Amino acid sequence: MAKRSFSDMKPRVGNNDSARLEELVEIYKLSDHPDEWVQVRFLERDILPCKRHWVKIFAGKEKKEVSVPRWCISFDPDNESEPLKGVSCPYCELSHGNEGSARAEHFYLVNAIIRDLQEDEPARKTRPTAKEEETGYKDIRSKTWTPVRVLRLTNSLVARMQELAETNIVTNKKTGEKRSFDVSHDKYGCDVNIKYKPKESGTNKYSADRVSGRTPLTEEELGYLIWNLNGDLLDAAGRMTEQQARDDFKKMSIVGGDDISDDDDDDDDAYELGSSRRK
Image (cartoon, rainbow, N blue to C red; front, side, top):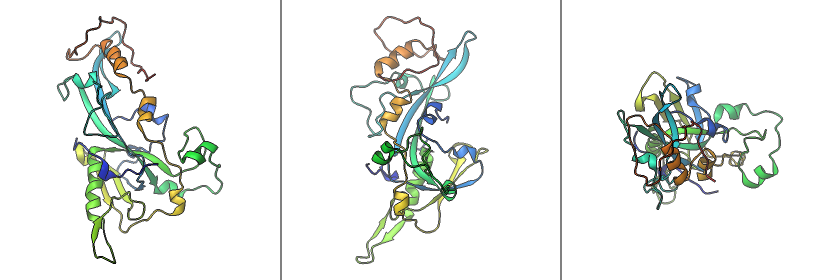
C-alpha cells in the first residue's frame, strides 16, 4: 500500500459526517469526546482528501428548507490542486457562501491508532479473515480487533499537523544534517493529542499538539489492520457520475433559484433525498 503523509495534503485553510461512510469504515468521532484530549498515532497510509457540497433545497410537501450532501464530481482525491479532466460538477456551479445556494466542505479521512483503544486490547481476539490477511485492510463486517480508526480531520487540523512537522526535527548523527519529519512517519513520527471544543467556533474548535518524545511504530503496530481509504470509498458512499449528478440536480428545488446550463428537457419527477451511486 502506498504511503501518504500530511505533507502531501493541500488543506484549504476553511460538518456533518456521512452516515453512509460510517457503514463502510469505522469512524472515531472526536465530537463524542468533547473537551477531552484524545491521544492518537497517525499512520502514513491511505489519507483520503474529500470535497462535498451541501446544497440548500426545498423538500417535501411543506417545502421545508434543508441542506443535502453531494460529493463533488470533479474533485480528484489524488490531485487536490486540479479538477478531474473532462468532468464538470453541477454542484460547483451553484453560488456558495452564507447567502448562496450551497456551501462546500473539504476534509480528510485518516487512519490512526487510538491509544485508549490500543490499551484495551482484548486477551482473546478473532483471527483476521483470509481477505484481511491478504490485503491488510479491515472489513467492517468482520469481528477482527484493531485499534485503528478513521479520523475525519478538518483543513485546519491537517494544517496543524503540517506545522507540527516543522518542529519534529531529527539530526543525522553522521552528517549533522537536520531534517523535519511528518508526525505520521513510521520511525520518526510521534503521538498527537487532539481536543474537540464544542463551545468554540471556526478553527478554534480543535486544539492539537505533539506528545513529548517520538514513538516509532513497532512491528506489531505496523501489522495492525487499517481502513482502505481511496476513491472507491467515495463511490460506495454515493458519489455520482456527471450524468447522474445532472439528472439529480434537475429534480432539486434549489433555495435561491440557482440554475445550471443543461440542454436536456426538464425533468418534473419529485425530488427524493436519497443519493444515486455510480454504476
